[in-house]
Amino acid sequence: MQTQKQLEAYESNNAQFSSEQSLLLQCYDRILQSASNHETESTAQTIKLLKESLSFRENPKLALHLMRIYRYLENCLEKDNFPEVCRIIEQLRDYWHQAFLRA
Image 1: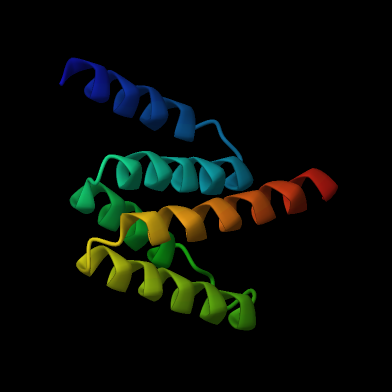
Image 2: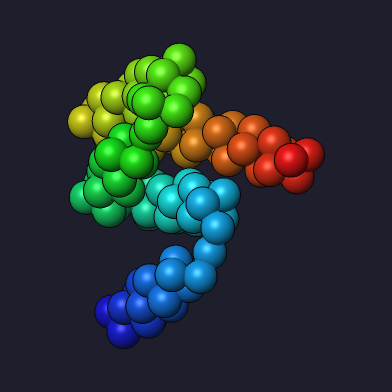
């Protein structure tokens, strides 16, 4: 799909110039898009990226809580429970978006 490849290239180029907050929101948006389309592999890859980016050194308590949420999302994916993945990610995205606006 040419359109999907163009979108990925755009996101890749944009990532070089985005803040960490913007990158996090982009990951959540990507999960929402792929989970809405029942794209298990793409959704799983982005969740894996989020897990790998957690900083247990900077904020171990928050990282642990997020790791548990991301593992739960992986379990939901294994059961093809895409609505639950979307529900959780929408909540996380809204939470972080509001937190970034206040910062």
